[in-house]
Image (cartoon, rainbow, N blue to C red; front, side):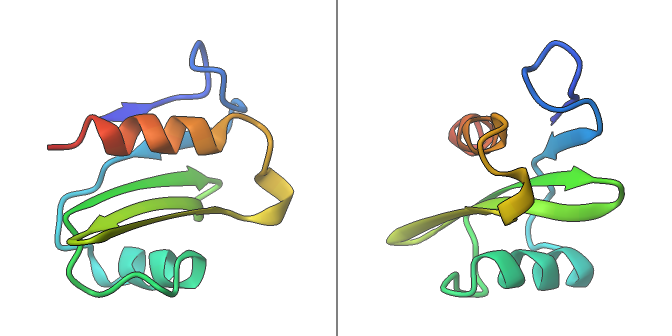
Length: 90
């Protein structure tokens, strides 16, 4: 599932995606930068991407969750979109 900026309340160049698990190495590195407390074994992930860079992550694992968005992108509806995307992931 990918939600684009148009009609979703997100900035136009931001996309939220639920990548398949386990995360590809580049996505795993980006997610670890944003949520270093997350373990390697995830049960759910939603990532926000802008201009080819991961700018936000909502991650779930057995017994925990983490959410973080790069400072310059906070307060633009990205956090909410990540939470929604993660909640709909089985």
